[in-house]
Amino acid sequence: MALEDSKHRNLHIDRTGLEVLRTQINGEIAPAPFNKLLGVRLVDAREGAVELTCQMKPEFLNKIGSGHGGFVSTLLDNACGMAADTMSRPGHAFTTMDLHVRMLRPVTLASGLMRVVGEVEKSGRSVTVTTGKLYAEDGTLLASATSSLFSLDV
Image (cartoon, one colour):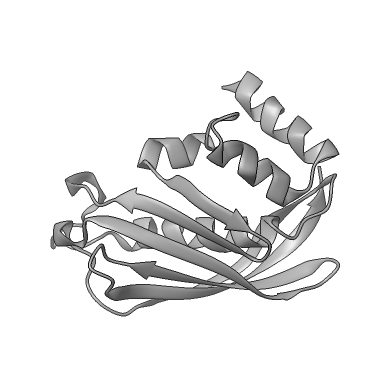
């Protein structure tokens, strides 16, 4: 695990965030360990926007049978963070300062292969503001988020 973590860190030193994300899409590097655990897959990255997918599973349900709020928040945080990363310059990466999540409809097993979209609203030198949207496989909007992220030296 430590070897893979250092590989991610080293890539950020010499490449833009968008270049690093594209190496993940191309399979040159593995997803972050937490994303791998959840089955989150980065499928598209372009300047200012990303798209992820994740298959809803019983393990992601809370005690009343809907998607756990922490799971939904994690998906949106990933999309917002990766969207910000598309704007990062070499030697920098982003970390979340705040995340505001709105649960709009229940996430259920029927949500299927979910799509998570992250977009940059405003990119500044040290703070970037993003939005995220979580969609069910049928296109229904399930949740949305806004996030502020801080640029760090890596």
